[in-house]
Length: 246
Length: 372
Image (cartoon, rainbow over all chains, first blue to last red; front, top):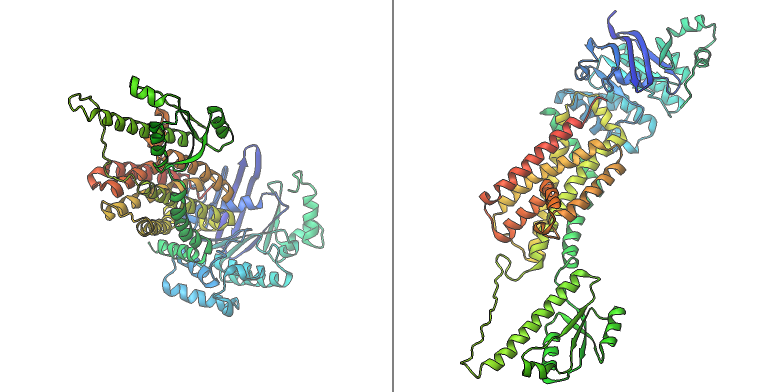
């Protein structure tokens, strides 16, 4: 197995506040790696460091074989990112957004054309291809944003609470897209606080107060904590949190 | 360069889809250039004058007629006493009182001199000083006339008088528009160029799309060029629109080379957009950017030499005008449009503005961070 993400004692401090406290883990190629934690547990900060958006205070991290600390710019060709904030251009159409991101990731004209046809068809957006993104319902926008985040077939895609505010059936479709990408060999790194979604992951990592408190497959975690589901596991761990829910 | 092509394509699409930007681009120059120069006019007319003529002689009425027929003054009232006239000033009905004392004609003929009193309401300083200057000039003129009346018969007795004849170069009719319109156009290009650039980037910050760009391989300089080029073009278009309005509405045709004007505006836009860019790197929300821009525009407006001559500012203020790009543009604009200056006359100005452009843009690029 090829290791796509590897961190060792990765830490981020904001003044006295330690947002991420010496986290160490590895993620394998094609894996769906779930990152769980209460608000303020440090999930987003950890993810931003791995994307090269935030400089680590100390520790090591490699993404797609590249050092995050020293070469954050080199990582960017190899990753996709979808933030909590909606990140497509609302005043551009569906097709224009796909073509724009495909273009800045350096796809050729032919690839751009093939890719946009393929995506529009897969998303069932044929009739909406020329509609401004701001006019699409949220669920569709999120699916589109995910497709755009992997338009360049990156090695890893980072998803920061991608299904926030999305209805259950669209969430299900969203996860189908995630499985599909994972089968193509794209490693998925996803944060969420929908605990039922955690069950869909190959492995999950639960963060509490900036530290990793548990890291295993959903099955193994349930066994270890003698719990029926991940929600229970999560509550057992979250109870130990000292940081307030912000 | 392929990346830049995609960035530009995206930017132009967004601009032409945004009705507000288009409105701002066309309405603002048209309205401002047509309305502002008419209102911000230094030619002062309709100064209300109260006349207290205690002499009621032929000379005194000659003088009063001369004043009232000059076109600058409007008679508020003929008052019988100074006190009465002073009331008019108090009640805002008169701006100036001219009091011709009793024995005006008598003293003038017998003794060869006579004093006249002018009282001026100086709340509006400009009106007061311009008004009393006009009046003094008219009285001097009157003085010269009567002197001539007396002297002419005896050609022998020549009184030496110095007559100052001034000719106004470059703007012979002292046309206020010729002075103001090019300046206001500069202000407009500055406002729109700086503001649109700053707003645009901050809006991307707020909506989160800039973060998405930051995780792509797009380089800082590519992103910034992708922003600067479209707004640079818009700036040139607005400038063209402004020149057209100046020509059609005010009949102002630049005396110097139009190509030279465009050369300067090209360089100037780079500097002012670098400034907008810098503001955007220091603000997180459009509101913050707005406040900063508003603050600086006030300074540009008052200290750029548009309304008040830079030479009459105190030394410390002149230092400020030296470091704000707009003062160079206003100077060069007037040089080329009114005076017909040539390339070699404006070389120092171009070089300074170019230097400012380099400094502002470098600063902005350094300060724009993809990583926090």
